[in-house]
Amino acid sequence: MGNDVVLQCSLVSLAAIMVLTGLYTQSLKKIGATYLFGMLAIGGVVLPDWKFFDRPVSQWCTLVTDDNYHGPSQPTPPRRRKNKKSCFQV
Image (cartoon, rainbow, N blue to C red; front, side, top):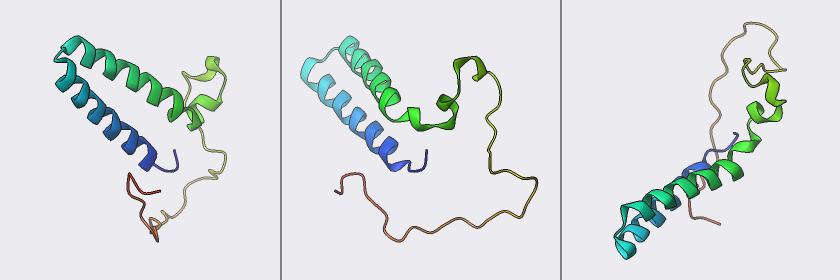
């Protein structure tokens, strides 16, 4: 995943929804159901862009290889972001 901000925002939003559900219903079963449904929804929307899921199901037990890898090389320094997006900025 190129940008983890979406995943982080989704998880924070799910936590807030779980707290509101817990305060409103005062039911641990509904909090658990909200968590399970939210994690499945986040997993279905955010995770499929991983290279792991772009392969046939029969190859999921093998390691993911990078097509751009051509042997050992010098580590590259991390890139700096010019403008860091917050979770709730548009």
